[in-house]
Image (tube, rainbow, N blue to C red; front, side, top):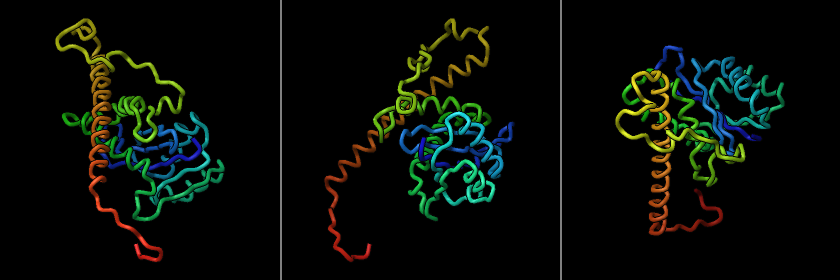
Length: 228
């Protein structure tokens, strides 16, 4: 939690709670990521979310890295960083690769939310925490560990229904008398972890294809002073 990358994902479909964006904070070493649904990109709202939701829980990072978005370049945000003695850095204009940690996560988050909301887009902000528990419980390609293991020193205990898919057909836990919220939560947890496992497989397959391509790729030698 020394260097944390931040970004804003959106706009997404407007919700009943007026949330339209996702504020993303990603630790560059642990790959631990937080995502908060927010209604707008105002600097005051972003600053208060970072302080109340992130800093009050994990402490103040030494460095915050962002793009050159208006919200992150505002005087209020700079004053906040000065007050908390946070070194504020920014990525190069028109070069999102310099904020790659959070940009890669944004693509993953969009795929997971799309998977969830393909039939109903009214609750993306409600299922966001369930998507995040699935992400943090999955092995990260760059570390070989789950973000939970890197950050907490252990893998968290997960509901068995999230790990072992339930059988089709009625059972005691999904009887008509069962509360609707419990049933929906059970479905959401099962979907989130199934998607996390699927994403990991696709990532491994992508890496295999890259290695195979590199074997046949033509290597080019660069000389000192050559324009690149």
